[in-house]
Amino acid sequence: MFLLTAVFLLFYVYFTLQPVDVTSAALKYFTREEILFGRQYWRQRQLLFVVSFAIRVSILTAVALGPWGDLLTHRVVRIAQGQKLKAALLFFLILWGILQLASLPLSFYRSYVFEHRWGFSTQTLTGWWADYAKSAALDLVFSAVGALLFFWLLRRWPLSWWLPAGVLMAGWLLIQNLLWPTLVAPLFNRFEPVQDPEVVAMVRQLAERSKIPVQEILVMDASRRTNKANAYFAGIGKTRRIVLYDTLLNNYSQPAVEAVVAHEMAHWKLGHIRIGTLLGILAIFVQFYLLALVLKSSLTYWQLKHYPPQAWAVALLFFLLTSFVGSPLENGVSRYMERAADRESVVLTGDPDGAVALQLNLARQNLSDIMPPPFIEWFAYSHPSTLRRIELLKRGTHR
Image 1: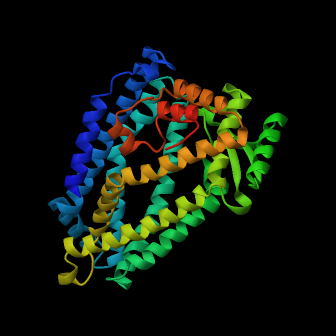
Image 2: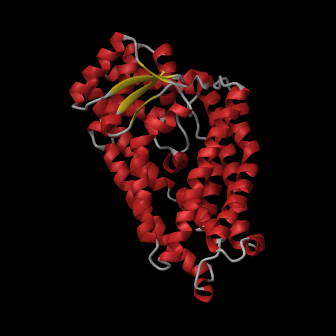
Image 3: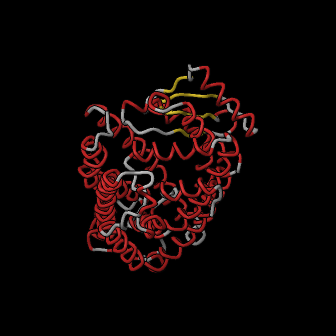
């Protein structure tokens, strides 16, 4: 796993620093200056990701496999006076704090300084810290509960813990889809019904064509953080809603808004949300099963007859590495769905030129790298590159 991660990371850095030549096909839609400017932005973003990933892997490797982890384990066990769940909680809290402190400077630079420097962020410093505090608090609470459940399952079913863990995690995934729009999202943004009657009518018409019941059509105050535009569907059942960024409504024409909404509805119509959820649940069980094999082979379960607190660091490292190595598969499925949604959205709107115009506008607005190296697109892109999407829309076929 380490070897494959290192190989992918080296290729990722190499192709980030060695972009492809600008082609005549790209120059039909963008100026050379636009292409190079967007490429510069994304190159820096990708390198910042590499640094962040390397920091996290280094810390988790040192704690999971190095003497630091052994030392920390011995100390928390001694402090907890042999109480295994208490020792596990102490280990979790210390490791969580280390990871937060180590990632904070780069996280601040990436999401605040860097985005301000490139003209995207509109967030105040106070707003950034408020978001960070809320995110950290939620992460601490949910991660602590997850860690305690993890160790309880390890003790209760030491050889088959992965199966009930998968069931619980799958259930949590479904609960998240149900409760996130109404309980978590409002902690970070304000949501209000869309007031523009033309936009509401357009969304309702698309929903009727798609045969998708939409409970609410909301606008989100994204402009308090960013200039970037987007829209998304959220929730299931009675919590299903479509959310439009205010930056989308304020800065884009109605045909462009229609193209965005149609694309999101196409995902629902084609069952991509359901398929994605099922694939996510499958991935959860596979990862937990593989983690069970790793824990049994890397820790002293057979000698101690229990897993030490260090197992949490091993689990975090395992999920981090497998998520990274599995990126091509996950993103490949995502790109396939995005191409299908592009095609279906044109069927819904009957306006392929509007879809092309949207891609051009979004690429300019978001400083997209419109033609990344093939490896970067294969490995890291959840959506087809801008130039590829435009060409496929122009041809009216998706591959």
